[in-house]
Length: 423
Image 1 (cartoon, rainbow, N blue to C red):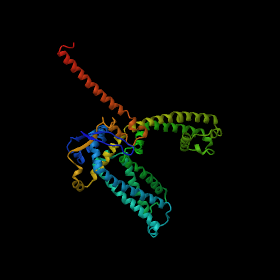
Image 2: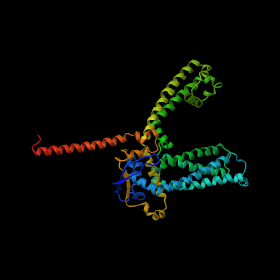
Image 3: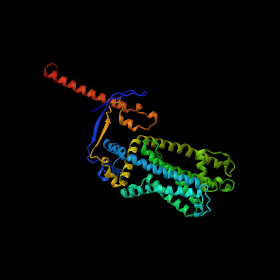
Image 4: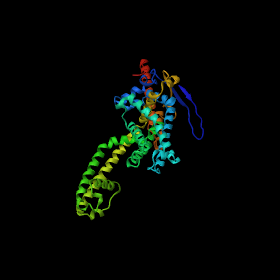
C-alpha cells in the first residue's frame, strides 16, 4: 500500500490518498495480435460470443490503458494529422471547384495558377487518403469481411470510393459538368466531416459521439419509424385521390410523392386550412387532415420522442464501456498494421506483465474512483459529487464494521460462557 499526500494549491484541496499496487497476472496480456488479450476478446465480442462488459474488467481495462498510453495514442495522433491534411485539401478543392471553368481541358487548366491549385489540392487529398486505404485493407484481411462490416467501416469505404470517383471524373474531364459529380462532391464533404467523430470518440470519453448515438437510437426506433412512414404513405394516397380533380391548381398533391412530402412538411411545421377549403371536396379533406395530424403529429411523434429519450439514457449509461471498446478496436487495428521492425525496436511496448497503481476506493474522501473515471467528460450536473457510488462505498464500509463488531460480540459471549459468567 502506497500513501500519497497532497496539499492545498490554487484553491483546490486534497487529503491523504491510498494507492494500491496491482499486477495483471496473465503473462503476455499486452502481447501483439492473437498472443495477447485484446484481439481474442474483440473477435469474441464481434461474434456476439461475449458481452461488452468484458472490456470493463480491471485486467482488460489495464491492458487497454497501458497500450493506449504507451504507444497507441501517439500513433493515433499521427493518423489524425494525415486525416486533417486529407480533409483540408478536399475542402480547398471544393471551394476552388465552385468557380472552375468546366469547359477547359486538363492542359488548359494546368496553364493557370488557379487550375494548378485545384489539381494540386486534389492530388494532396488523394495521397493523404492512401494510408487509410492501407489500414482498411489490412483490417479486412485480419478480421474477415463479416467481422469488418460495421457503420464506421462502411462510411470509410464510401469515402474511398467517392474520392477516387471524383478524381477520375475531374482529371479525366468525364461528365465534369454533370450533376453526378456535384452530388459526389457534396456527399464526400458530408462524410469526411462525419468521420471526424471517429477520432473524437477515442481521444476523450464522450456521450455525444454522433454516429454511435444515432446508431443506438435507430436500432430502437427502426420498427416504429417504419410504421410511421407506411402510415404517412397511406394518408398520402388518400389525399392524392381526394385532390384528383384539383391537381392542376394544387401542386402539393398532384403526385403521390408530392403528397407524401407535403404531409411530411405539415407534420414538422404545421399547415393552413385554406388549401383544404378551396378544393373540390373540402369536408372530407379537412376531416382527413385533422385525423392525420392527431395520429401522426400527436401520437406517433410523441411515441418516437419517448423511445429516443429512453435510448439516449441507455447510451449515456454505457458511455464508459463504449469508450473502452472503441480504444481497444483502434489499438488492434494499429497493432496489426504496424511494421514488425517497429515492434522489435520497442520491446518496452510488450512487457510480460502489466503493473498498475489504483487509488483505494475508500480513500480520496470516500469517492469511488471507478465512478470518477466513467463520469469524465459528463455534464456538470452528473459530477461524482452527485453520484450514489459515494454513498454505496460508505454503506459497504459501515457494513464491514458492523460485521466485525458482531464477530467480536460472539467471541466475547463465547469467552463468558466458558468462564460460567453467561448463559
